[in-house]
Image 1 (cartoon, rainbow, N blue to C red):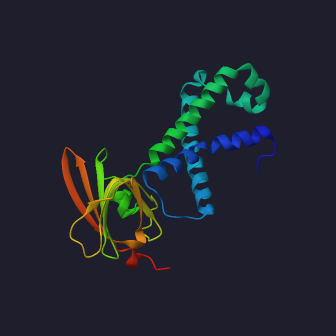
Image 2: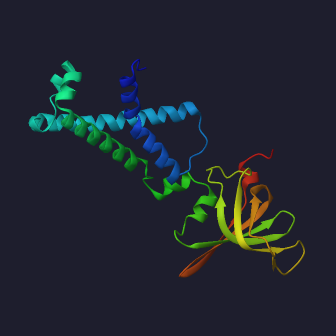
Image 3: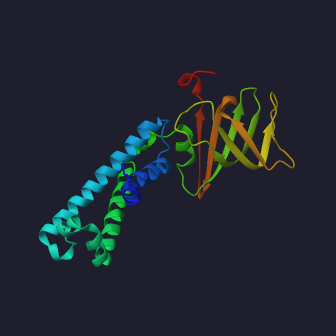
Amino acid sequence: MPTTLVGLLVFVVLLVPGFAYTLRRERLTPGREVSAFRQTVRLAFVSVVADAVVLGLFVVVRVFAPSWTPDVQQFLRDPGRYGIDHLGAVAAWSAGLLVAATVLALLVARPRSPREHEDSTSGWTQLFTGHPGARIHVGCLLDDGSYVTGRLRGYSRTAEDGRDRDLTLTGPISYRAPRETTSAVLPDVGAAAISARRLTLLTVSYESGEVASVALRRSSSDHSPSS
């Protein structure tokens, strides 16, 4: 581990590509729960690989066009003096290499195929993100026979198709009581939260020029144990 402030700053900067990779990966494909140790190893591994690739490109440029790059030998011999005397070049190349490594990590973070995206996301995420820009209406059949509908406001983005998650609906909220045949809009109700534990059927309708409907039957009891 670094023992000086400068060494610590350099160490943190070198981990920026891995940090960017982790953030983008979590946003694009909400991952399954992993240990802190595994997350740290992945962050460090991506950083090392991205930094190594970019440094390799720097070496190629240095070999074929040495006048374009800082003098590495002089920098290693006396980094303080060389850095001060050539501050502009050193800063520009350092920033450029860091940006290049970060961009490379961001590109790698993107799922390489639809299948990979599906394997790392829940059924909810696949349903709710399948039509970008569409207004999403959700119908929830609960385990007591009641039925609730509304426009999707938010949902748990965990990749596990488990029972410990929720989705929220915004108004108008319609409700049909058990053993009833008609639904009614609930007055003065602007939003509602539904627990996955209560769901037996989830229907999703998309409104964006064309309207499509799909249904997802809950199978969390088959995939995760009851608590």
